[in-house]
Length: 323
Image (cartoon, rainbow, N blue to C red; front, side):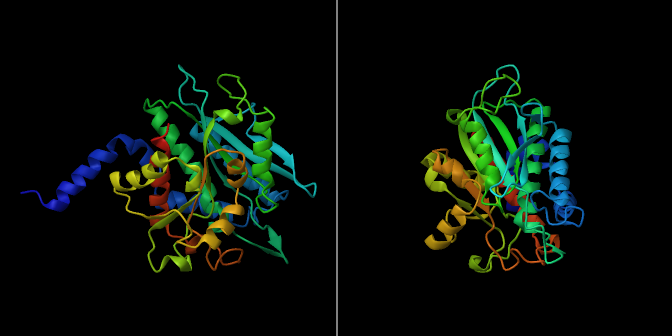
């Protein structure tokens, strides 16, 4: 006789089976490897305009190329100047919804890859902030291309972006927005300009690897999504539906656990803000501020890989429902 637990496991397997090609792209060692590379000595703190920052940018471009994204305007990198004259580089690629019936709608999934660089002779690893978010974007790109490889088609294109210079007044997201506003971003499939009215959603991932936020009251498997006020009710509710339907089981909060002050503070300091300010539905996924932020101890060993995998699953399923 089947037990209740075996029936539940079978039902869960049935629900996730169509998404197996995507889910199979993520495992602990792979996540650790990605985050370790970005937070290790070669990238040397990933400061904008530094050799370490360039190493991180090259790595993201290689990952995008290898998983099958298409570069925009025939280049993975789009350079820009920060306020102090430093050159930054956004790394951008696209998963087309369909080649036979090209879509003119776009969702942007982004994370900033830069960090503090070297201060007082010491390189700041920034494993959570924001190697974790950068790794999540790379893995999500691989998940969606895996689904394309088995014949899936989408009604919306997905643009993946590794943004530079968040630590320099969010210059990377400002540069990306400016290129869209001025019509300088071109669809590599259709050759048409990617304009503001074609962007249906901007998803920013900023610090998503930790379970150490002191405001979570001891529960490790949580995720915060800020910016729900920019969404309609259907999209907002779909997040909770995906969490339940696919048995992910995260504790979801749409604010910084009830703190209006922390919610507003954190929202204003990340790369989704300029898109939201210009009328684009925009959200930020995060695991919140911890005592390791901007410290030398922000290392991969402090992150929770099991929970990070669940968070990536949830973002994947939520975005997939809107394609």
